[in-house]
Image (cartoon, rainbow, N blue to C red; front, side, top):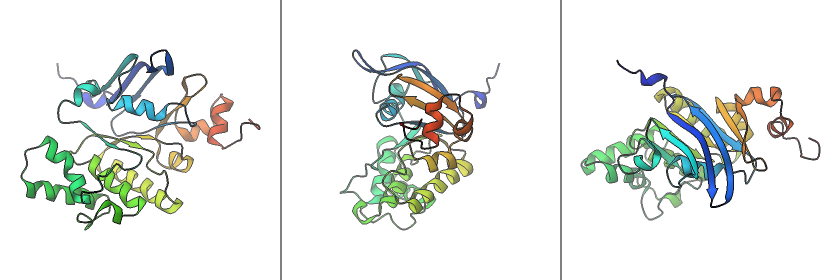
Amino acid sequence: MTVDITHQPLLRVTDLTIGWGSHIIQQDTSFEVERGDIFVILGRSGCGKSTLLRHLIGLATPLRGEITIDGVQPQHLLLKRPKFGVMFQSGALLGSYTVGENVALPLMEWTRLPEDAIAAIARSKLRLVGLDGAENKLPSELSGGMRKRAAIARAMALEPELIFLDEPSAGLDPITAADIDELILSLNAGLNLTVVIVTHELESIFKIGKRCIMLDKEEKRVIAAGDPRELRTESPDPRVRAFFNRVPETES
């Protein structure tokens, strides 16, 4: 019998507990990300968003539970050509490499393509994110928004079905942040790219997020899941409504 994988979650997290030793950051976390989704992981500072991301991409091992991407644990995916790409918050571009060389790095690591083919693919990815002609520039010559775009281009170099974005709007002015939001929407719609985003930027969450989970620092668990626009007004948890409506803790 043929199994239709299009109806299986691309990312599945089951009963996950993360932390170090006896220190628990989040526990009993379960969620699924469908193909083509824009899924947001959010919560107040210190709740464990970035730590969860490290586990999702295989850079840390959970204390309990399981993570699978297309049915495979992320640690195993790191041993072969990755099925996902990552944009770290700072962009993490290598300063001594040109932008084109930065985007080419995954191709050099995981393929045996000739140099001219790799360079052509790098240029095409930069064009896709609106950086046509920037391949010979150094990261220091780019604005903050352009560096974010270059990092997204590198995350897509191997044409993954899934990319993880860590705070893509952080440190950007409102106009540039809105441009990054539009880019994410365009890539999602045009390529059916599945996107998992870690952020607490409310404007971005409401504009691009299809579904989300909200982590809580005190309870060390997910306290809300669903469409962020609905949670803003319909969540039964006052902490969730306060977060989405920017209500100070003293008023909530």
